[in-house]
Image (cartoon, rainbow, N blue to C red):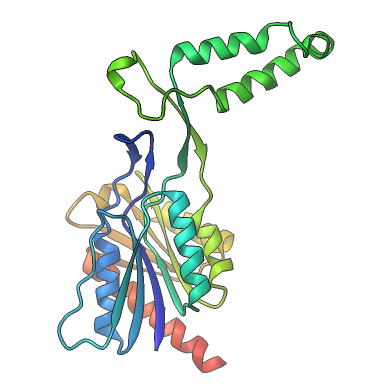
Length: 271
């Protein structure tokens, strides 16, 4: 039996109880990939990690495969879920299609609170006065930067009607793809590169660099322009420096599935 991990959908980072910062991932391609694995191979066990609103794969009658769905809506919960499922099971194949936010919400404030905090840091009074006088601008710049990154926060449940503006501080999130090789050291890993306004040469070159950087077996490189159309196009780049083009979600899904299965069976035969 092959154990397969597929991530799908998007992440959304909480601003408050009513608002989130999100992206446009739907999970449709991830669901197709999971379904294609079940159709192409007998006795596969798929762990499908997705956001709550993402598309879910369907198992056709008579299938010998299974799909276990796990929900993760933001970067931090996704990290925890992946750590848990990879600790519980050794995966042969990992397909990381999920559109993961590059940032998470670090703090929420407003202009008045932030301005007051910045002014306070620049006053040469209080315990830090002597130090500020000695190295002035450097310390002030550092303290102001720290204040901007971690400002005094407004109430957790924000009512936008009570504020003329809201300032959201975003911190860079950990790259999930950089974690996967450590979590699944023996798996055949495919990740995605999504660019905007890139041609074939740029897509392929960026994909090759990502394979080297993140120690993947394959990268599916595509462009947002085609993702938004009915004619999505992708280039599946392998670590042996070759690549193949596929057009349409179904063709992309099947190409990823076939090449991943080939690589997984080759690894198995070499053991």
